[in-house]
Length: 391
Image 1 (cartoon, helix red, strand yellow):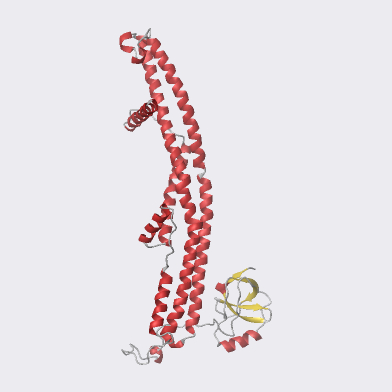
Image 2: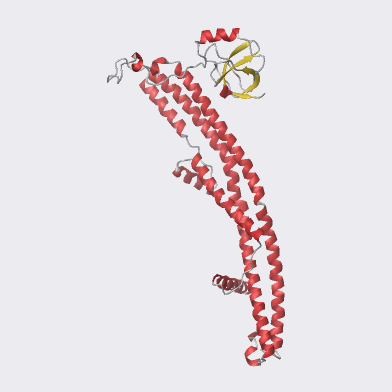
């Protein structure tokens, strides 16, 4: 009961001090400019971390219902069930459509090829979401749920210590004013405090009250200074948080780069495979409506552009012959590391294995997306997107 009464008294004193400060009836101890800057910097870091975290979650999982479900599973400390990605679901529909419409028809064959690519895209998306969650989202959440909660707790404690300090200052100020008044106009009946009924004089009573208030002020000042130092150290730790978030941001960019590179590689392979099925792209010879212009006989040709499998201007057989006859330039050759496996589409291209080193160079008039690659006695065109140039 005594502790409860004491806590209630402290809470009431703080509430009175806070209310008087709001109405401008009491003085407030101001923090130094450096401390205020640290507080503002910490608040800004917290606010922007929350925004970046929420928007990254939207990027990784656009479905709000799925995000709410994952949030509930995390709060219940239960494993989030595996969810099929949109690409994998599309691949499933395409595969089922091909099975029903005829897997041997041009349309069915194309559906199967596209479904396989979409399945790989979905798997790459799943890996990207998992990697980004671990390397980027988790550190941001740890800051908000760990470090920031500690900072907020110490800031509230500092606010309470500051209210106690200002209340002690106000109490000492009133006691000194009453002591001065009792000294000049002694009136034992009116200046005597209730807690000191047996005191000999009002002046002596207020002198004791001033001593007590000064002692409480020294204690409050010590506690405030100690808490201010603890809070300051935590706020200065925001710089370390920025360094950690910077490292996590680099990891996020790296995982995103890998994801889009995989997507590009899968779609490039798919486009090459579709280019080998000309029947898939050719429309009907008798269109339902006449063409708008008859200036060119090719207006009834393919309804979808075919991306050539090679980058040169000559046919594959002729390009392969030219490559064998052309010597590499005296200068301009570079070493390159292969990023992904690559299967040659024809004899003019060079098959690649991941992590192998090859010599590459360019020839006049070549497509900038392709280079000439050499490995021993073998030579052929290689796509630039599959290479990491070293020197």
